[in-house]
Length: 277
Image 1 (cartoon, rainbow, N blue to C red):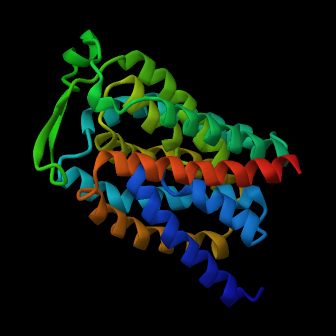
Image 2 (tube, rainbow, N blue to C red):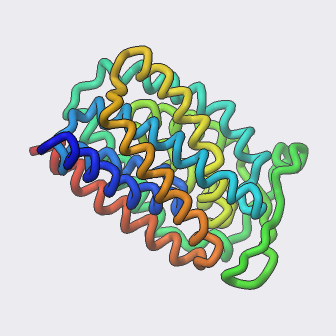
């Protein structure tokens, strides 16, 4: 494949990844990494490093729109980032010692776990979450206007300490796999902490840029970020994220959930196949 064709292919795939990533709050890494490794033949370590850069770009592009529309829960996002950034740095340092096949299998297993939990649990809007004294002290509960349902959606944040622990795990996986941690953050916020799926994806988009930046610094210092790979990927995801940010407000929560599950299921099959065979 010629350099020009590679650049165009990487940018095209990344536009799609950025669109889906901004819609479901995963940063596009679950699309970028499989596409670069399985379709374009990029070494998985360089693909993960490029994906980390792409996640920062996705967050920077989409998060401003979600903050402006008051969908992202800024207080909750900043709190969870205290543990997630630490995990991201640890994961990026550990990535150099994990076998390549192990990265593929780990990536696939994370996607399978997340897909299963999102499919088997009912929508958070229909569930009653217990009060959380820590969340109340920090004033984490809030509301946002949902144009798709034409109503104000209020919710109460619960199980904040569990969210902090999960945030560290999400950070480790982000640093290891270049996925921004959204595959953990979104389900935890939605299924465990009581945040509606739309607010969870918007808050995840707000958070993943900071998470990925911590890991990107380690990959850059190690020389794993290749400019000719990272540049078209970053440009593509920025374009896609802008489109996704415009679409999110008009989509219903159950549609976003279906898209999230479909994206992760495809990525899980591809990465497990590569890791095992």
